[in-house]
Amino acid sequence: MDVTAGALTRERIKVLTPQPSKPKAVAEAVRGLVEQFGWSGKAGITFPGVVTDGVIRTAANLDPAWIGVNARDLFGSATELEVQVINDADAAGKAEIQFGAGAGQQGTVVMLTFGTGIGSALFFNGVLVPNTELGHIEIRGKDAEKRASERAREAQDLDWAQWAGRVDEYMSHLEALLWPELFIVGGGVSRKSGKFLPLLGGLRARVVPAKMLNDAGIVGAALTGA
Image (tube, rainbow, N blue to C red; front, side):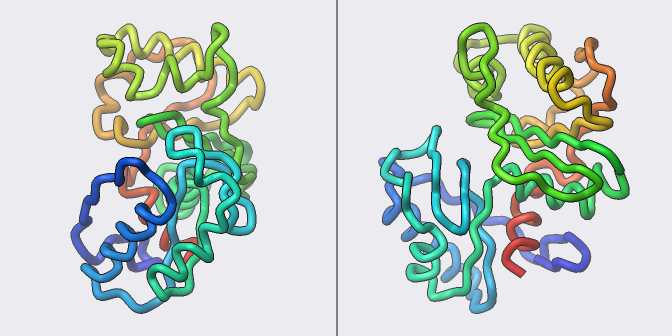
């Protein structure tokens, strides 16, 4: 990553999440990535859960063995690199605020990543409020991500209009709580934003797709590790 330009300098390499996704197995997969890139500098790593001072506090979509693990030490030992660890949506948000759809935006900005779950990143005047985990607010008696994540759309065979209705309801709840000036929509589904963003009708705030699409998390990880 070129952290001054917010640009990838090499092609991405995709590695499947080990099953079961226990800490040592995932750390070994990360070690393999570092070897493939021949990297020896600082590194940033994102994690889909709450991270405080390098320690994993929640792991809703991974093995519960992660909870309480010092991921900074785990990945640092596995890779022999100086490592920083950050929530995955927070990393994506940092990239979009610095280089992407949120650049120069004042006031409150909410970045949402729709994928296996729903990640969130909250900013005020460009400053991150970490570990918001807004995908877990309750909608109709369930975690919002159980109804409105990309995985929910696929698992429940929802068409784009049906899914957009759920996303609209979820984002309207967030808007009533936070009153943002801007929503940035990212995650794996962001590359298909034209199929559902025009169907969102109940929001006052501007809603835009992430400019970096699914690369935002990689960029944000590098910014965190630099």
